[in-house]
Length: 488
Image (cartoon, rainbow, N blue to C red; front, side, top):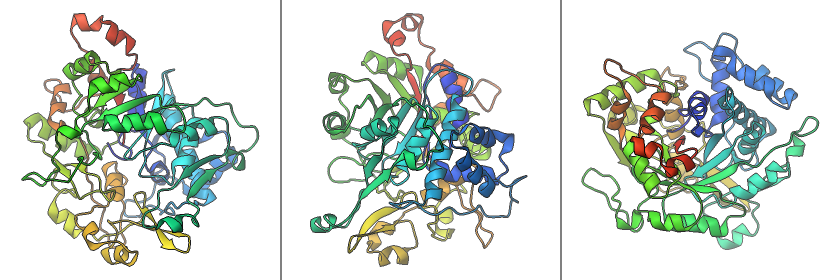
């Protein structure tokens, strides 16, 4: 779904129904600060801050970022420092607090678990973000877009309020350079505590994978317990795993996936841990199919992304729903858009960066930096670059010109998707870029005759509307949370 679409409201609604609501943890510090800059409508951020266990930290953040009544429509959002291997204390605190608040709000009004989803590619905020979510009692941590082998160990350490470490992936360094380079990120909860630390439980860890090989590798090599898997097919929204083997494109310019990219569900069952299937599973028949194959359930993103509770801008949501009703929605798997180099699903919509004229009119800039790549500068120093930043800047940092072609600033466009678009000094406004799964047009199934919108409850009830025989089947009864919301 991207940044802030699966927000606390959506996760709360889904978890209240006995399924697993999952909030997006990506860029939550920026989302939180922009909510405060908009005046904290409804007072929800304030309520979350009041519950944070370290009140001096909460007070500092409120005083610095809250704008009474909200900033004017023509005023830019305050820029945060971009993340680095060794973040400032201020940025660490923001990650802790923002993740705490999002999970806390999602957990209100029910006793069911809530999850949070992070991208392995966005490594630098990991430790503080996970700790903040754990302070709020998050029940599940999900992670994909990479191989998160060391997250289980992080969860173990933080659950005991011990120092956690996570190695930053640095590119461009020869083997001998790494020997002189400190790439470990560290977080010691004791350095941030204000009094006794609260008791915490380790959340369950679900790795998002696209192959049996990766799932088996996680079980074999992870530095702690892996509790299950989300198995995503190439039809899922957001980032897709690249096709195995040499990249080939079809006539439309999309990556071609073949037999080697298919997940063997029988092999997944043999691993002996729960798994959920994702990518085109947003209907009752596919849920039934998944359960029959031995899955614990399905992960659903696109259907929930267009529900009333999601954080997507209402105008964008309405336009794409109308396309879905008409059966004209189009989704393009863009092999170039993401600075990560992973294929990225993009809904085709005029006025967004999916349109060539909008993309070309935008001045390239990088001021959020969540997808920046750490690289070796020499002498043990680490630099940061993004292939979507100004081309001359990227080349000056040792990047290659071909890596800049077609790259889009996902950080800023995904913020625009949820109504937090940045206003530039020249008065221009950052455009949106919607990511959804290939099954965009199927969201029409959730809309009752005469209506133009639907709720998360409509989605869950439709997904669980199996036949009378299936409703009483042992498989469904054993799958206590057969539906998970996708979030990043």
